[in-house]
Length: 213
Image 1: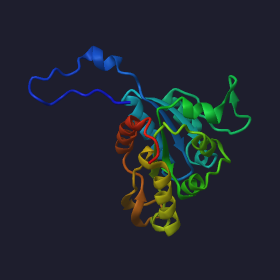
Image 2: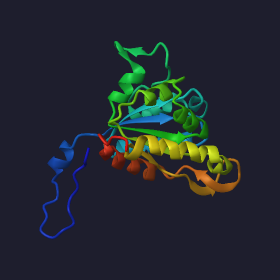
Image 3: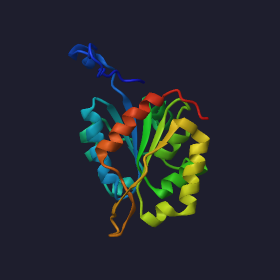
Image 4: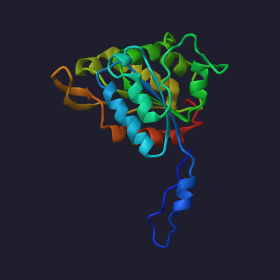
């Protein structure tokens, strides 16, 4: 979905308040996995909401060890999706409904483990099953965060390369930044600032209907 913007050229008529207010909200599915950077995903939700997005959060079991689901429920205003089973809400299968209700899906943070499971096509929890059932028309964004050595591992890089080859323009990876990591080391593995990730998610929503290359 393309968001309307005012033009910087002379004589242009920027969108008035009524036009901005009537712009449809982007529906974002945010999948939170179990890394220390999971706490930053809360700020990503906050930034998305400030931009007017509707945010549905789903979490892995490991992610709940870092941040309580209630935190995301308070920020998003929606109940967090947690369990693959029994997996039915109001007659709809959750891991199918979640993907069809969104315009863009984002994994923040994307751990090395979750990236490997996505590469392998596993569907053993709600977030992974949701992504396996995600319609091909829905763009997907990954924001990896991990120890620098884990990021540099050939298997991690292979997984990302092959995922990119499989999904084409539909997939965007926001690479980790160099910083002091939770382990105390300096290296590439840190999650970018929440505002940067939120902006990337909203931009990537415009890739909807982009089929894999």
